[in-house]
Image (cartoon, rainbow, N blue to C red; front, side, top):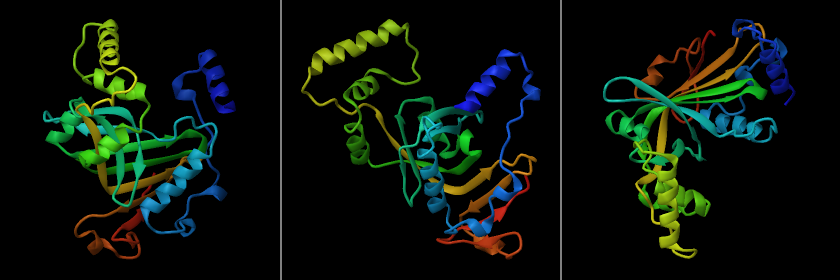
Amino acid sequence: MRLLIQLRKMSAANVPLSALRLKYMEKKQAFLEENIRVKEPITLFKEWMNQALQTEEIIEPNAASLATVGSDGCPSNRFVLLKDISDEGFTFFTNYGSRKAQNIASNPNVAMTLYWCPLRRSIRIEGVAEKIPQEDSLKYFHERPRASQIGALASEQSSRIPSRKHLDEIEKKIKQELGDDKAVPLPNWGGYLIRPKLIEFWQGQTDRLHDRIVFRKYSGVEKEIDNVLVHPAENGWVYERLAP
């Protein structure tokens, strides 16, 4: 919170963006390979996420920037909420008619980034997105607040609409039709699982010699292991350190 106040004061004083300098970690707090308890990125991701969940200044620790590429080759980026972490990968939910879903249909290669400023940490994920089973989407859909379920049903995400009033009228009609008891039907909506091929853990250093440790997993990657630059990790992963 003090950091936010400080940044706001600096903005109010018309400090140029080029002059903004946030203090990161010191060398004694470096993110070192020997401090990784389990050399496996999903386990490490969960450990970092747990720290983010326990950090009060981080309001939405599961907010993640999702990048996709359309059939025209142009990238698109937006924020989603990460809703599950498993050994298989990372799950988020969206309307299957949205721009992100259309992009994934034509090119399933995606990237996702999370940034936790108070911890001076970021995690970057690259992988392939695929739809999760419909029964899993339905289960999660009905775990959401009823208002969120109705909102998802009312909105054909990324489609053009004439006004905010148009949405409100659709929502009102759905509420009248369903009443207080009828289950909200599943719209064209559901989850995607990102199966990761690369997961990078970044920790900022004040001298800008930031720590970057990358885990990679795909066919043939084990042939790159030389125990100097590329090291074996668990469950078929390898890891390496990158210069900042």
